[in-house]
Image 1 (cartoon, rainbow, N blue to C red):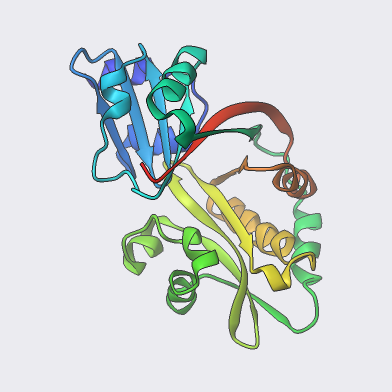
Image 2 (cartoon, rainbow, N blue to C red):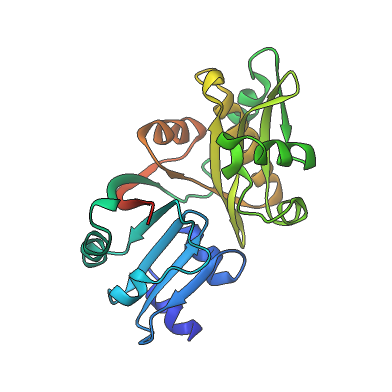
Length: 247
């Protein structure tokens, strides 16, 4: 069974799927015929194999009932998503970033960390910062895929920017797979456009490099693509996803 699932997802260069396949985080579900599979981690569900309406309509406990991002393997899956969810499915374009090793300019990243704006403190996410993330709606996704701080400490990794002891920006692992993390990054609205996301991202990437981890990046919008480029990544391609609310 595991071999069949690996075969279904074999050409999908997506770390959230790898996390599920490796049993590190997330879940895999299949249809009765076992010729289709979905990988679910956090807000994301990836559908692959032979399009199955039964699988598309199946909602395990891990589905968040208020919001999910469904990613089709191909056009046939996309059409099935539109058929099953209709007006509830908002078609969006996301931006894949290349996964390339040995591309980061450490000196440039270290300079970004040192040049954090005056009045801000940059540090790694530890227990206090983990709970700050959970207690701020805008920052929850920085740590929310890890059930508690001990799990985050074992699997996760992140950097935070604080102002007067208050969390205002962060870059952290949305998820973890063997050999790396998927980066989540955000800044509180009233502290944006100050270079905080850049500094937090730089600090997190440097820490990943120290630990021999790959810091994977997937972009929701062109702002994220631009930030990734500033940090040393290269754009790969656009892809389609569907945002589903209130289903």
